[in-house]
Length: 441
Image 1 (cartoon, one colour):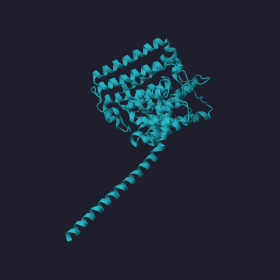
Image 2 (cartoon, helix red, strand yellow):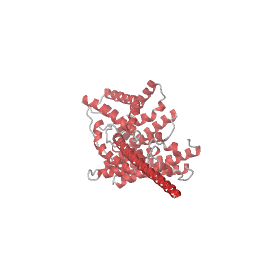
Image 3 (cartoon, helix red, strand yellow):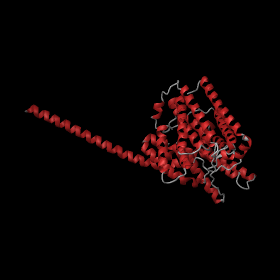
Image 4 (cartoon, rainbow, N blue to C red):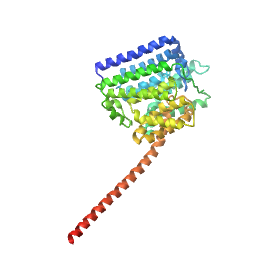
């Protein structure tokens, strides 16, 4: 499935409008973009480090556009098909460019991926998306490179660690996918959690201590909302246009379970973009309902929802997760930033609601909020996809329970149908007997 030339021109025009709007906002803010960018790439990036505080609005967006441009160029050069998972990768990595990922700390991971492809004699484009998601572990590179009293050896060690991560992650990710059977859309988050736990444990025995952070911006809510509303409106307009100026097919998408579902392949670019725009508004609306301002981490959560609206998420299978997280927070916390963050990323469990129903979706969201509160200590806050790690555990835990209950329900239903069938057969035989008896008389 390809976009025609006219459609590409319209997309480029609307993206240009977005960039111009961003430029106006940065100009008004009078920020030094370059110094902010330098602050970001030389900063530690452990959870939670909001780059809007570290580098300002201009520096953060410069970093985000640099990473987006890098990934887009790689995909174009390698001719990677722009389908659902590739779109999810674009938006997820772009989102995490606002906290945790910068153009310096992701590059060693890509280098490790290239070395793995050469070692296995496979085409790098076949694992590029996996490697782009693996940049969830980028804070390891920043933490080693820019720790206190860092020197040249620290930089070399950081790059070497990133290369090792990129080299070993692909075979591990393939193995981990079987644990949750695709019911956690963020498989690399789960993989990153396992890998991060191992690396963090090794670092601890050599007395390398990681200090948790909580640096969250509260100063750019208006600018981020303007840009978000503009972006999601653009997606809806593009989708509506590409879909023949109609909503045809959206109803079918909303019936999809979301399990291993590439919406681009199944429903086309038009309806997929439309769904992405809708999910973006759901995300920022949810944040507003919880009384939170948009910050780097929350924007990353919204953009990840938008990206995976091309690969499994829609309003019907994500809403139960959002509800479940809120229900879990009642009486347990008044930190609604964490509630919002956990809910946005917790929608990685959307296929559970899609396949097993909204009640199980609410249960999954409730469990996710409980698990994600404690799981970060395992990897020391150095796996940016901490919620993906939690979601993998929740999915793996719930699957056998849900399957057992469903199997029992199916067995009971089958027994009921068999008894019903036996009853009808008995009644049929009885009527035949009465008829025969009447004829004898």
